[in-house]
Amino acid sequence: MLASPAPILWQNLRIIPSGWQAGPVPLSDLVSEGRRIVWLGEAGQAPDQYQAASRHDLEGALVTPGLIDCHTHLVHGGQRADEFALRLAGANYEDIARQGGGILSSVRATRAASEDVLFEQALRRLDALRAEGVTAIEIKSGYGLDLATERKMLQVARRLAQARPVTVRTTFLGAHALPPEYAGRADDYITQVCDVMLPALQEEGLIDAVDVFCEGIGFSLTQSERVLQAATRHGLPVKMHAEQLSLLGGTALAARYGALSADHLEWLDEDGVLAMRQAGMVAVLLPGAYYFLRDTHLPPIDLLRRHGVSMAVATDCNPGTSPATSLLLMMNMACTLFKLTVAEVLDGVTRHAADALGAPEVTGRLAVGHLADFVVWDIDSPAELAYWMGLPRCRLVVCHGQVVA
Ligand code: NIG
Ligand code: FE
Image (tube, rainbow, N blue to C red; front, side, top):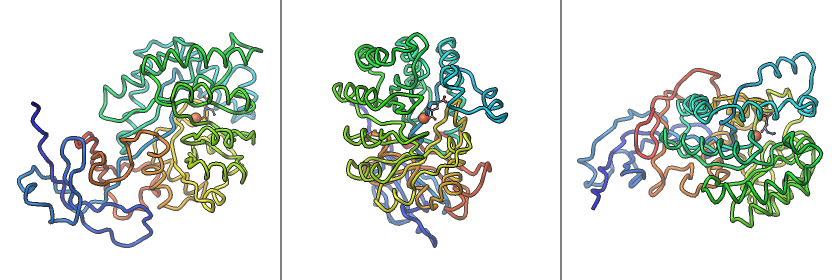
């Protein structure tokens, strides 16, 4: 029989409460045993049975749950700095995509890269996120667009979870763009995605959820619905890149399939917001993409707020629209560009991001029975988490009860 892991008593934490406004945060102690929290309460009040546990005195530092990046394209070949330069000189993102650049240029680079090279490059990005307190992350495929390369990307995502103490959820995004070999035959490609790629990769245990880019330069409502139907047939949760560049109504469609989230949402209207509310979906806001595309059409934050739709914030880390490896910077941008409050962005990278992740184990909340994933910060006020732009202030990252950074 395995001996149960020794408990650890973490003393004098100030856990920033959900909905924090201002004012003092009380001192707590927390006991972890193995991966989980077994006791949480007032400082100095841990039961006798934990008094002999090994101790970490956190000396009153502010603590949050581990941060969750619930929307990334972390695994990809190459970069697109030249395309960025072209856009600065006046070219537009959608035109570049229609001319075979954009996502398809990353597809060429990803197909050409070995699994090891993809792994090493993604690992650097993952480590940058982890150093800032990320303990759980979603990673999409979608730069392969053929079975072998989509598999390679998802295998890299699984390898990352072996290489580092972090929770990884994979998302199959075969319907990200139309690969050149299917030019003019988008419906045939969707058949390939639904009938060949999705079942094969699901069978291999590589898929935790399914996503689709529903957009003029992506896939139509009808094509997107076929992907959602296939995912549902295979028992997989769905999500959608929706209303990023135009209002197609993908969000309401995703809601009909009980999607975990709809993501981007710059052009979302009130009907879409109501559909999200009814389906209990999370609105994943991606201020990095809004900023990097120099977008000016804001997502309907007031409507989302008014109708009580949970908002998450993520990096969308990808080579085309958001080459971002700082979730803290995204929090800053969500505040400055989207006018979220500090309390909203804190929930947006913890509990609401957990709901969007669809990993029942990862809750984004510190409570007895939950994972002991938390971050100890070198700050005086919770607002500093959304205030600094680049100053490292993560003192300690604890993932599954272990100090990992
Ligand atoms: O989330 N919108 C679609 N997909 C990515 C960008 C892909 C790319 O340009 O490489 C996004 O913004
Ligand atoms: Fe994305």
